[in-house]
Length: 112
Image 1 (cartoon, rainbow, N blue to C red):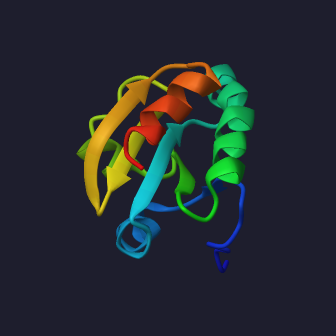
Image 2 (cartoon, rainbow, N blue to C red):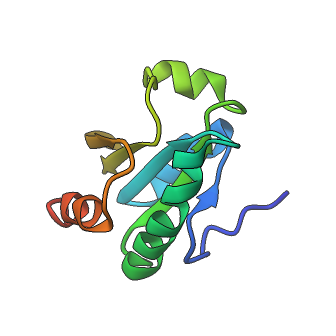
C-alpha cells in the first residue's frame, strides 16, 4: 500500500517508514497508540485537528504499537497515548496521556 504523505490528517505508518519520514520532514509529531484502546481512540480527533492546522509545516503520524514492536521497544513505550516531537530527525520532547488539544499544540509551538 502506497502511503499518501501529503494527507492533512494524521496517517498510520509502519516502522519501516519511520526513518524516511524523519528525513523528509523537518518537524514530525509521532503518536503511539494501540487499536481498541479507548484513550487511543479519543485522541484521534485531537491529533487530526493538529495535523490539519499545521499542514504542511508539520507531519503528524500515528504508530500502532501492536503492529510495530521494534520501534515500541526502541522508544520504551509503556503508557498510551504517547506523543513524541522530532525536529531535524532528533527527538526533542514528548507528552504522555490523553491531554487537551491546547497542551499538545503549545508543545509543538515551542518548536516552530
